[in-house]
Length: 257
Ligand SMILES: C[S@@+](CC[C@H](N)C(=O)[O-])C[C@H]1O[C@@H](n2cnc3c(N)ncnc32)[C@H](O)[C@@H]1O
Image 1 (cartoon, rainbow, N blue to C red):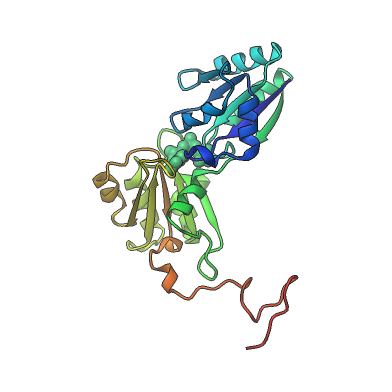
Image 2 (cartoon, helix red, strand yellow; image 1 turned 120 degrees about the horizontal axis):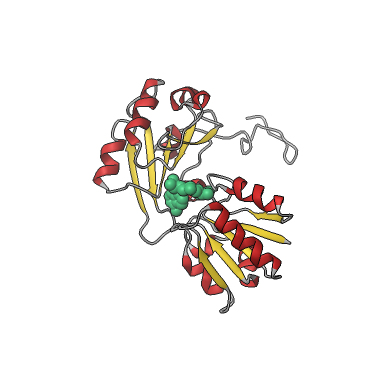
């Protein structure tokens, strides 16, 4: 018995991987996570495929369905938004499935963090500015370990991508400033990246909460923060070593200027 866990991508139906789409086409049963999965993808499924929403199910209920269908010899796909490895809650499903002797095959997807960066036309790692991206969330009802407090993480002054934090922007602002981020540090908020109703809001640490409110964004948003999101970054002279004409590497000998 083998179950495929597939990343559906951030929204646009054609941002699923070729492999993920093949599995959807072959599936007898598809269980999908929430409103962030684009239902257009199911047009590619077999007409007789059983397509089930899991938002109203608890863990045991949904795992039981998967196991029953697998035991009946069906091909089962569990579809997750973005990439299943980030905030996908797949580990708890896998624990129960493995206990029942089910093998797992995970197919990655385009995470919303990268879809949002693409839509904001951003590179998250800019040479000489930052070479690190932190993927995190602000603490709300789900606790974040004490040692990962935002005010601590932000001391690195790298790029930070906030998932699941659209209603926690006051907290985000406070903690970023507490760790020394200047109020004018750029932020790009991408609401529903790659969906037809996508919205991109460019703001700063100081104005984040107000601008999110003005634009009515309370969910489904990726908040990308740090100087890599500077809207004027193109005019600044950051260059990578990779394409520097004086830099020698495995594929090219540098020339002295
Ligand atoms: C439960 S997490 C799932 C993340 C997903 N596994 C991924 O890789 O994108 C849901 C959060 O992801 C972000 N998200 C997912 N899809 C998004 C999209 N299309 N645009 C912006 N943010 C998105 C939002 O922060 C949302 O609150």
